[in-house]
Image (cartoon, rainbow, N blue to C red; front, side):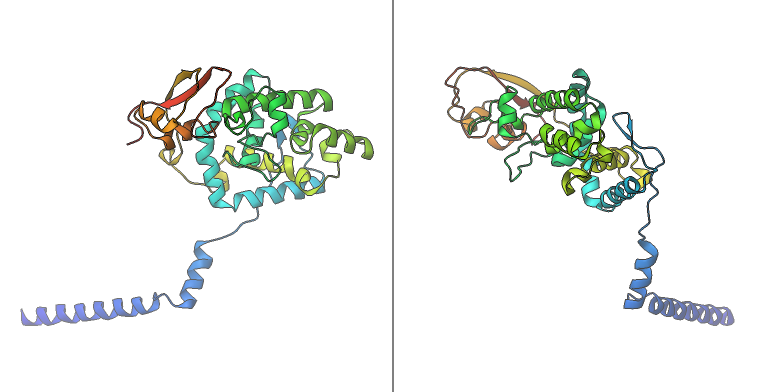
Amino acid sequence: MEIVQKALAFVGLLSLCALFIYALQDAPTDENFEKKLINDYNVYALQVPENLDFAGESMPLKNPDILERMDRELLVNTYWQSNGLLMFKRSEKYFPIIEPILAKNGIPDDFKYLAVIESGLTNAVSPAGARGVWQIMPATGRENGLEVNDNVDERYHLEKATEVACKYLLKSKEELGSWTLAAAAYNAGNAGVSKRLKEQEVTGYYDLLLGEETGRYLFRIVALKEILSHPAKYGFNFREKDLYKNVPTYTVEVDTAVTDFSKFAQNFRINYKILKLHNPWLREPYLNNRSRKLYHIEIPKEGYYQ
């Protein structure tokens, strides 16, 4: 029995020594850290798919210039991981609103990715004065029936702004002849794109020499389309529950002035912040409504904000 106990003690001592040596070898030294970093994080060149298109119009990837420009946008948007994950999360929330409006107006579904690169699916504000998910300028909004002033700015109304974007894109397609040129014109204007086509004596987007922003524009759209359509292929991992969801709402009609939206919100058991989250087009804490216009205000259903 004593011999067995001594043997067990010896084995235990050997095991303890082995663990100590292993711990020393695996200590977070600079050398080990660098080794782990190299082994655990790798950056890969991406294979540009052989066939890519926008709105059914093929991208001429056999052209080396087109291939390199497409490769750039795939790399930039794949390895900007935090932004990529946010696009997956937001698209789950906003695409179901945008898609049926595009379809109703005869706009190819791919144009939802134009909204992604315009604003990141947020109510962005540009230095030039564009606003909202579709980045609509004040004059364009008013010309297409939106109310745009300090009190009410319907460029922040996603459904109405999407309708305006559709009108603009349909007009561009009619004037310029292709969806790729219509997409470019959303960035540079119909007149700007038309002028460049005439100056350079070409008929298509991929043959145009353009400025940096418009020159990258369509490639960015196609890159986001490719990545958002194939998350696993580009290394994005998430669960369904990680994605953002729309909070169900019901509509309240208002055809008078509202003097205090904080008090108005309390009538529906929400606060001013929640009211503004669902109605960002209401720009001030009150509604003037001298013309007695009928407005539709979205109120979240009970139980979603505690």
